[in-house]
Length: 177
Image 1 (tube, rainbow, N blue to C red):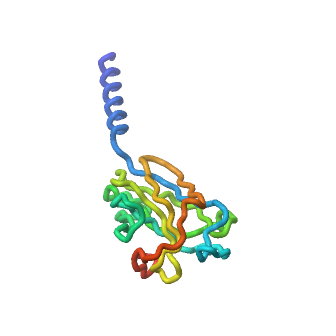
Image 2: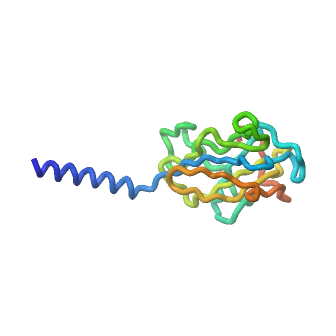
């Protein structure tokens, strides 16, 4: 009987140690609940409306926001991503919901967690971007955040947003792109 207990304990320890050594993906909630809310122009006072699209960019070249950055690759079956592939994400854009969910215009709290499937992408650096009405010119760009394995909440501050850019990121034809 003692041998079986030792064998079971060793098997249990093996599975626990192997799962702790595995590198899991991230699970992140994005939020901006600061004041003032993000506005329709850099020095404006009109808050962005609920439904404004926020795109998530992957800073794959580790040099901050630039034209080489892309939206992270979506998994095969968002939002659950049960069939992977590893390192993909469940969404790469969401919408402002400040009035509806926070009572704060120009703010947001992502209702769904942004997650990577089974693997922490390398590098795991992301930022948010909101475009002007032309869909080409960046209006607001957040600081780059490095995500880690496991759950985290990213509460952006007003000081972590840059308004305008000087050059377009890319042409955005529609919200499904």
